[in-house]
Image (tube, rainbow, N blue to C red):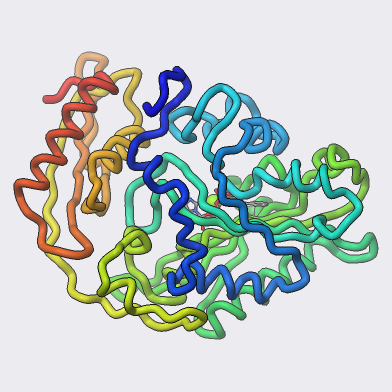
Length: 361
Ligand code: FA5
Ligand code: MG
């Protein structure tokens, strides 16, 4: 908690990422990808917004996100106070941009910025990541669904060439593909080979036709627009072959020196260091959540050595729930030191007891 405000749940490590603007460092893979996306959507106005604090109203209410939606919980969103949060998606500008610019070119735009979420810890999720979010009004005689799909297929081809397969998942067939601010929603994922030579799916973006009620709120009743939001890390992982999302934050020269502005090159692993894991078992409490465990872990793990946190065992005893989590440590840049791992593990344990009121077994 950074301020005394009772809503404030922003940790030190999250605060330290604000303003880094990786997407503006021309030699950084995220910036190289951003430029490629801007290039493809050259008919849309480019908007970069550095300040990640936004009114809760814009991030959720104006996008029809229900009051009891899980994404609003303090276990999912970082709040500053009762008015503002750290934006959880770049779609938070849909209302203010549309409202202030009705009738001019801002009704075709694409934004870029850093977004913040309490989330899973693994190779493709990080609590701070980058999104580009597009909004495009289409003329009345254009099929908005088809236009969106064509543009997204074109984007995938522009970024990945012909070698990467992509799939559209539609809300009509997949219940989990749902956004309160769009209709005919869809998700795009790509097929990638995993370590064992099998194929895995990686979700890269969400999209849809902007909800008619929102178009009316913008003073554009009956008009049609498509919108999408894409994760830049996920795109860069595919294009550069970057295996772990933590690497984007690395300041190790062996990472940063590999990239050239404007060029997409294959990432060369500079050695895979040994991993180790520590398990922690406890009785949960009403205060406990997996996302808060991850948030505390990221906070204590200043050098980014935690690779994943997974639930490996769970059982009930006398009406209480016991869980066991495996925390896997692997440094991206050096060999792990036992003392460092033990220190992080102990701090996490202490904070779980103090802040989340678990009973360690
Ligand atoms: C959204 O954020 C919607 N705002 C997208 C949207 C915009 C839909 C406009 C319709 C219209 P979602 O939560 O699925 O959707 O996130 C979008 C993308 O962000 C994901 O596909 C993924 O590429 C990326 N992403 C999400 N969470 C993380 C994370 N923790 N770490 C890295 N990338 C993430
Ligand atoms: Mg999604």
